[in-house]
Each structure stands twice: as structure tokens, then as C-alpha cells.
Image (tube, rainbow, N blue to C red; front, side, top):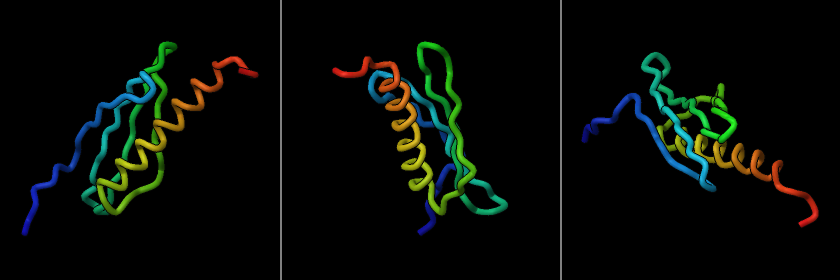
Length: 84
């Protein structure tokens, strides 16, 4: 069975009220998946990317989401007052 898989697509999601966008892309030369994206913080955009490549689009998506969530957690936790 041959599936029609897009070679590039955009994911728009939010986490903890912070929007983020990721672009998942298939490199036809290496037949591997990668991603890049950004988080839209009030202070401006924060770019995200990795030099890793992935065997499947789902692996790339999962990694992008984990990376975005960690980035958002780190930024929001750093702005919270300590001791509460």
C-alpha cells in the first residue's frame, strides 16, 4: 500500500497559553525528517531548531513538541517569583 505523505507541513499548537509553530520537512536526498519552528512569546518570537534528523515524521513531531514544551516551561518558570 502506497501512502501519500506530504514532504513538508506546518503544525500550529499552543501549550500553557503560548502559541508555537513547527515546520516538519522530509529531506529527499537523505530520506530523513527534520523540523524547525518558533514560540510566540509576548516579548517576541523565540526560534527553535535541531540538527538531529529522524526516521519518521512522527518522531520529528514528537521531538519538536517536547522541545517547544520545555522551552515554554523554562521561560515561564524563570519569570515566576521564587518561594511560592
